Image (cartoon, rainbow, N blue to C red):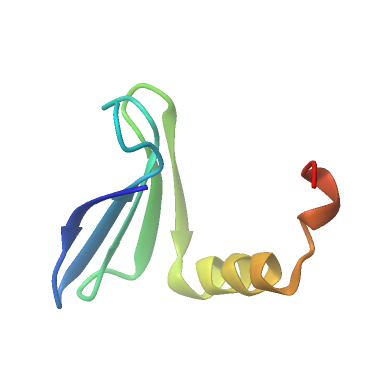
Length: 69
């Protein structure tokens, strides 16, 4: 992952280190939503509560069985 912006006010991470077309995650202190994606691949918007639920589900391993180990 590439950290495009990491300040006290905003975090923007791109999933790929080398290209500029991979989706990103953008979260800001002054916004009620988290944006995933980009212009080319499409944008998905979560409110922060929904995004937190997704993060907690991922941390709990709910998606693990879908990855090759």
